Length: 504
Image 1 (cartoon, rainbow, N blue to C red):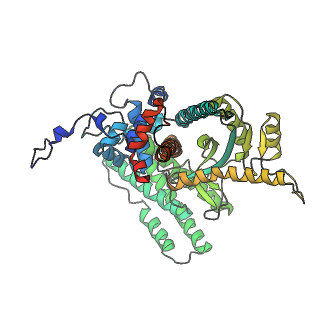
Image 2 (image 1 turned 30 degrees about the horizontal axis):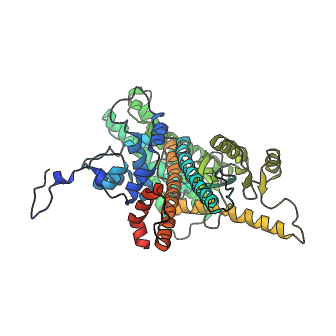
Image 3 (image 1 turned 135 degrees about the vertical axis):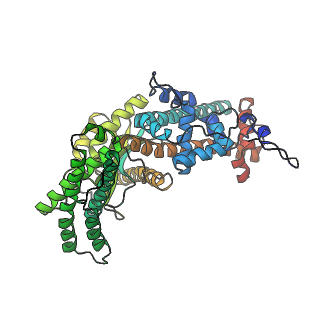
C-alpha cells in the first residue's frame, strides 16, 4: 500500500531507493562488505541439486546472511524473517539492491536450509574467515618490515601460519524437558491418544471405549502432586501405568491393522514418534522387570529419540542431554570436528583433530594443548611420532623441586588451553549453543555449528575494529602525515566509523 505524503513526510515509494547509500559504519553493512561472499556462495551452491527448481533455491549470500542474523540475535525462524523485512541494513547484508517490504523467503525454508548445510560446510565458512585473517596479519607484518627497513631496524620474523592446536569436548544441550520415567510414559500416552483420534477421524469411526488415557493421567497426577515422591510410590505408579500404555498401543495398532492407506496418512515425524513410544515402553518394562535404572540407547524424549544422556560430572548438572561435540581451536577460530549423539571418550578425537588441521592448513601443528583426558599414553605416543610438542603436565608423580622452565611450561599449557573453555562459555551463554531447538538430528547439527560460526564471525569483526582503533589512535596522537597514500581508504573508514566515534 502506498503511503501519501503528509507535512513533508516521504512516501513509502520514495523510501524504496538503492541500499548502496546506506552508511558503511553500520554493523550489518560492514559484514556485507567484509565477508567473503564469493567463497560462501561456492560452499552453499555445491549442496544444491541441479534438478531443483522453485523458491527453495535462494542465493547463497541471502541464506547464509539470514542464518547469521538468526543466531546473532537469538531469534526464531519467523522473527528472523520479520526482522530482515523491517531492516534495510539487514537486507543489504542479504544482498538485496533496494529496500523491500516483502519477506525474503518463507520461514519454513529454514528447515530445508538446515538439512542442506552440513557441519563440514560451516567449517569451510570458518576456514575462509581464518584465511582472510591470516592474509590481513601477513600484510601487517609486511608493512612493519617495510617500516623497519626504512628506519634501519631489524625486520621481524613473525609467522602468519597458525602453529598451535587446542582441543576440547563439550555437550550441545537439546531443548528437552528433564526426563523422568513417569513423564516419559505420560508423554507417550498423550501422543498415542492423539494418534488414535487421528485414525478414527480418517476412518470416520467412533473412538474405542477401551482407551486407557484417563486412567494413566490420574495415576500420573497422583505422583507429581506429591511434595515428597518416594521410590516406592514411583515404582508402583510405573507398574500400574505400563500395562495401560501397552493396551493403548495395541488399540492404535489394531485400528491401523493392515490398512496401508491409513498408515500412509501419517507423516515421517508421526511414524518416528510412534516408534519412539513403543521403544520407550520396552525400555521401561525391561528396567522395571530387572530392577535397574539404565539401559542401552535409552530414549529421553519421544520427540527427539536420538538424544542421549551425556554424563559430564559437572557441578551444575552431572548429566546433560544433547550431542557431544569435539572442537578444535586454531588461531582463535573454532572447528567442530566430531559430532555424536552417543557418549564417547574424547581422547579418541586426537587423530581426527590432527588430520583435519593438516587438511585445512597444509601442515601438522607444532604444539598441542589439551586436558588430561587427551594426554594419555597412547595419545602422547602418537604426538611424539608426529613430532608435535605436548603442552601439558607429564605423566607420573610431579617432581619435588620443579625447575622454573617446567613451571613456566605448565603455566603456559594450562593458560592457553583455557581458551577452549572460554569459547564454550561464550557459545553457550551468548549464542545459545546449550539450547538447540531443532528436533531432527541433521538440523540440530547445523544449528549447533552455526552457533559457533557466529562466535567466530564476532571474533573476525572485532579484529577488524581493533585495526581501525589502532589507526585512529595513531592519527589522534601523531596526525595523518604518517599515513601513506595506499591507506587512505582505511583511514577514511576509521575516521568515519560510528564505533570509533563512540570511543573518541
